[in-house]
Length: 305
Image (cartoon, rainbow, N blue to C red; front, side, top):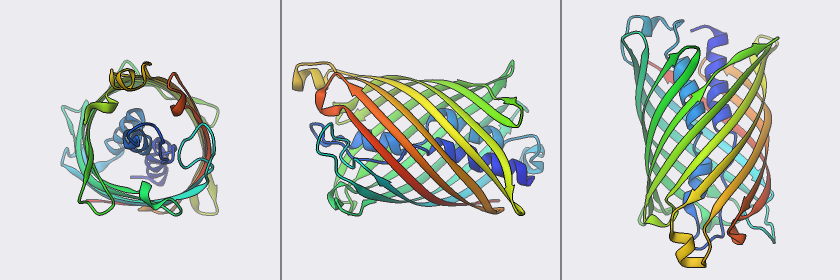
């Protein structure tokens, strides 16, 4: 795979992880929202898979399985660790993630993959907010009439920091459509996603619709490939009956988010990313509205075999 294609892969995964992890003060300590924000959007996952299974990859031209062993370490300072509408508290969120993925192409058109991983999240000041999670994903992606289509299923089991207490089991199903085009040297990618989340306990089951736009422009720092990027998105999420039963109101969230940053490919298997992100959530449940400003410094590595 060429240096340009490798950078595109790293950038696609990086844009998908642009929203940092935070906590939540809603009833029941909403670990579902914290974990949901940690996961990459399905649209970015689909783009990553499209690049992984690109025609420039000689391994996939032979249609043999592709394995990817990846790891990520990151630190994210945030202005509002509790995602609270009042009394903001700053903190630094530390995370480590590792995973193994297998993917291949079927019939020269359909890319399929499966992965499993583990995630550890810690808060520098508010240690009780930390948790661990076992994650997985199964998905398929294809291109039709110039559009990238994907279907993704992501199960996860979220535990306390010592792995002794299960806090949440979650099942997320997403369907996405996107299309990339160039405006000069800038790659523009609008996308739309529909999503259903099932959970046990059932407190945070919901439907959602997401619209995103990402811009990226490659450049070089000496001999190192690099790119600047900016993303923006809107998310509408409608929760099931839990909040109405508890608070007497339905919970509907309208999340506006944006980020910008730079990513540098340090080596064929490693990249460094720095970014700033902004989030504003308006919710029909007063305790779930918030504004947060965050940064992120992330080191990622991947070995393909």
